[in-house]
Image (cartoon, rainbow, N blue to C red; front, side, top):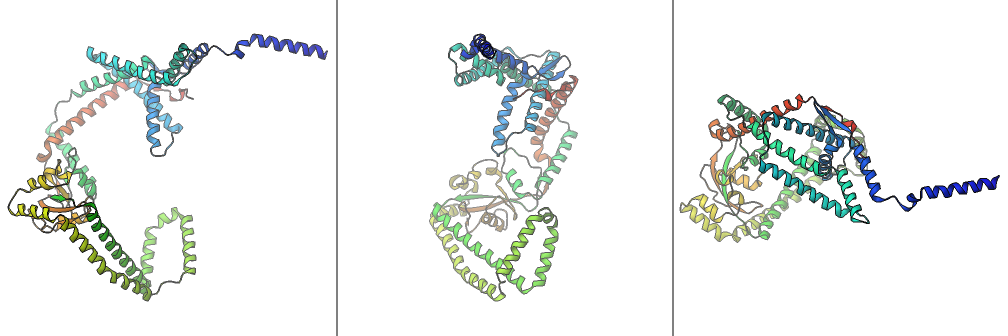
Length: 495
């Protein structure tokens, strides 16, 4: 019985081999790709949105989905962030909503009797074909196949998976052109800004700028160097200055920077030592200051309780192993540091003198022409090496400087603020990390709201563009709402 079973089993195996011989040899690649394509089309047939009169299939948005996913992945990667499921869902929502928007736009064009010009339609078709060819050639080069037919079929399959079919790429180009047409048409319905609208926009702009610039010196100063930003409110304490920059050899200028840094570090060290000495001599005051600081930081300490406890333990261990410094020891360090200040100051003065001497001939020439009454702007043009003084808007308006400026070198700021009257020119050149400056006090800046008349043209254009944009967006939202869209983002079938 056992032998019969063995023979029967052997016959079944042979029969199985005969019936499935094609599988062992290998399924025809073309047939396999056709099966894979059919499966992909079935998966991509998922309905991801419905609207009155139609629906959006996953197939319709795969090209846009892949493009946006690729872009966002690269963007996040720049910041060390990996895409997650929530981010992907957001992208899915975006591309599906955009697909419904395209339907709304197309229907609105039809209802208005608008269509792309023949020239634009041909441009759309040509661009889509070129995009398809570029994608096809790239994918074709990346796939393999024993025959050209197999390789072509594989490329077609990969392009379908990516959403880069001829129809999909054409639809993307068409939707973009139709959007531009309807946007231009609808925005064209807004042609003017009334006085009331302009006044309201002005008041809003003034309020916004006051909020933005009241304590943000750097932001204000940057805005005043931009030819694309209109400022409607000016902070207190500003003046405008122009300067002629002469740049010495880098080694000479670096010597000044180094000497100044050494002096500043020594002065800071002395201040720290004096604070330490004061804490030793007045322990009660130090305890009071410590208590006040502890109260101010109570919330932060509670949030980092574990870390703070570890730090405290380390501090206690350090106190046990290191005896506190005496007032005499600290004073000795102060005396030693102060004794070195004179030498450091002399080093600064020498470096500055050497720096000025290296460009003295040029400085003498410039000062001579200033004393002769030559136009300062012409001298900037002839001698200045600061691009900011050659380009608008700073070429005309100069730099905005105040005592609290953060955008300029501290020495430049100090030199600019030391000038007493409008029209004054620095008698002694100012040395900064950029070079040697001859500074002219151009004007005082009136604090507060800039007069409407001074910004009317720019405000009118900005307000008109904003009104056009807002009008179009409101109309677009109404067209989309009229479609009664229902989104099925969970229906996406993605590997």
